[in-house]
Length: 211
Ligand SMILES: [Zn+2]
View (cartoon, rainbow, N blue to C red):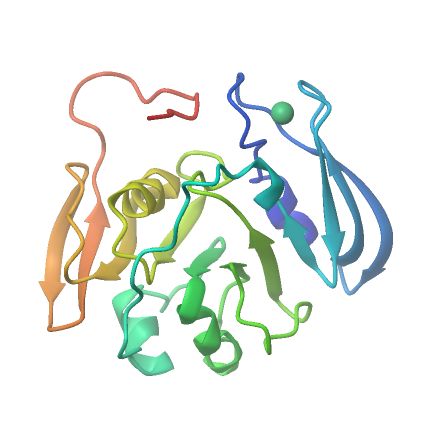
């Protein structure tokens, strides 16, 4: 877990949005490999092991995984869809998209990558951070510059849109709904690419909404 991404993490429990307090036991090149994140509001603790923060204890049992994108675009195509040419801020890769992480890092100016449910053979550190989460992504609203999700699950796609900053890109399975706050830019047989729009009227809630 890259220390700069820790600032964007939020406790997934249903209380006012809260930062998490880091207790690092082992770090390397500004990546926390072993440690704990603690919530000052509800006192929940989330362990960090091998650079991956485990939020899955907060997941409800009905967070069943939906079918994933079968054909993953090559890293260069993914970088183009996510508009990573002038990298600023971190990018979220959910599920199977994490298999493209090492290739993305080799591309010019690749930003820090946060992998949600990282594939087993991907090692954290050197620009890669990992979390295991439930349906709610433990991230601040608008924190990420772009998100790619492999789940057609509407709740997961809505969360992907929530954590993407205005103007940032979202890549999601073609058979998943495009959220209201996303403008579709392109689609093919497997995915759609969208841009996060400002919400039209009401001010953006800083609280994590729960269904
Ligand atoms: Zn909490």
